[in-house]
Amino acid sequence: MVQLVGSLRKELSDTLSTCKVLVVGAGGIGCELLKNLVLTGFKNIDLIDLDTIDVSNLNRQFLFQKKHVGKSKAQVAKESALQFCPTVNITAYHDSIMNPEYNVEFFRKFMLVMNALDNRAARNHVNRMCLAADIPLIESGSAGYLGQVTVIKKGLTECYECQPKPTQKTFPGCTIRNTPSEPIHCIVWAKYLFNQLFGEEDADQEVSPDTADPEAAWNPEDTATRATASDKDGDIKRVSTKEWARSTGYDPAKLFNKLFKDDIMYLLTMDKLWKTRKAPTPLDWQQLENSARPQEVSAGSGLKDQQVLGVWGLCQLFQRSVETLRSQLQEKGEGAELVWDKDDPPALDFVTAAANLRMHIFSMNMKSPFDVKSMAGNIIPAIATTNAVIAGLIVLEGLKVLSGELESCRTIFLNKCPNLRKKLLIPCVLDPPSASCYVCASQPEVTVKLNVHKTTVLSLQDRILKERFGMVAPDVQIEDGKGTILISSEEGETETNNSKSLADFGIRNGSRLQVDDFLQDYALLVNVLHTEELERDVEFEVVGEAPDKAPPPQSTQEEVKSITNGNKDSAQPSTSFKGQQQRTFFF
Image 1 (cartoon, helix red, strand yellow):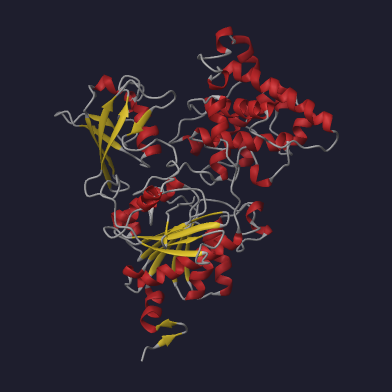
Image 2 (cartoon, one colour):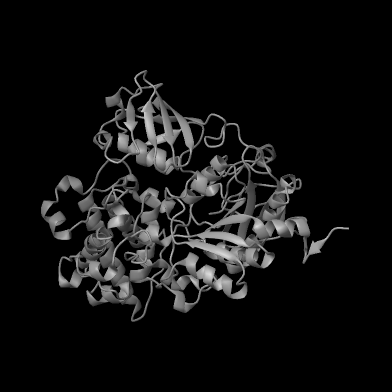
């Protein structure tokens, strides 16, 4: 007879009492997951999250209360869980899982890792660390009413990066407000800014520097006195953005200096943010006006909406759009609000100007109005019920893993509407590893198409290796028979190479680069394919995939067969085909 402890077999219950598990993330899914783990019988839990609690979290992250705002999510989640189960051993880390101290040896302490993350970079990193440590990982995600859970085990299943992912649609607040690294971050910020100035204000859409950013090692009280402003009207005041804008009469120059000079100078005082990132460069309206040249108003030729304006041209576009939107507000009367519409020219002009100015400040390639319009998508809301369902599924899959029943683990999809079999939860057999995966293949290798004369070493490091391939601290050696070191993760060793082109080091069509990230215990061979025919604003392409684009829609029955059960990423609700489920992955 099987001996039970509660609803679990005694052997499994004993395992839960002794095993050590890691939960990465203490947000929407993480709160539900920690509660489930504690109540299921897990006794040794490590919990890590770099975020602090915001008022907007309280509607769904039930371990937090109003009195906890501004405190560490991981620490408060631990304290809340201990209140209803004081015997459990929870270790909380208020930190980023991507910090070097959480190395392969750290991951090897655990029998199981469970992700409850909200960004792709951290997901990629944890995926690689679990592969290196050979520890099972349960990955999860939700987007509105949709969600999914899957199990990743080295050599047996696909890893998180085996299939290409669509461009991320939601981003952490501190990334949007403090450390944007992609144009989409700036476009989302500009849309938030539109609502803060002209539309319905939302606590989730704050645009001022995030003083609670856990990465920033600084004292807000001391730093506030160090942040210099251009004039008293441009000073950084901790008041409503709309209230402040009204007090200036929506003066374009004062708005400009607050957003693109004073707030940026305030960010620069958060010293730790810029130790491993390129610091932003503030802009000043008067200086730009004095140095403006006619040719800076517009750059490039062709259709107007495909031109990328110069900085002063963007300033003028910002000024015109603010004046037009201000007039629209006045016409609507006291208390009126505008709604952002990508097809409304003044609204699109405002977002295009604000986003591009922020891109320039953070050293990114600016985008045309056409590109901005196509990239500006709606933000998907977080729903507490979805998070609760997904957290429950994580624990169920975790019990299978700890019981040694990996063959019974599944990828499970939560749909908004029932499928033809009237099911909301759709289980699918786990796919085997992809032979072409540049992460979990036995000898990871990729081919990158770029212009060796235009691509700099810094661009290779930041845009290609870190941003595109998710590395943290890459070392690069050229396979030229001499072992030339192109990039070193040791500070100061190769920084003089940053501004030089790849061609300056003899890299040409067919060159091979050996890349190693010792933190991730990850090596990648990069084959260079030189070309001078890349599309406009495209710095590089990974051969075999369309860069930064979701896979095109499949229409024919034969095409649908090819993506069944785990091969297509989409932001749309999953549908079944002959009893099987198309793959999606939510962020």
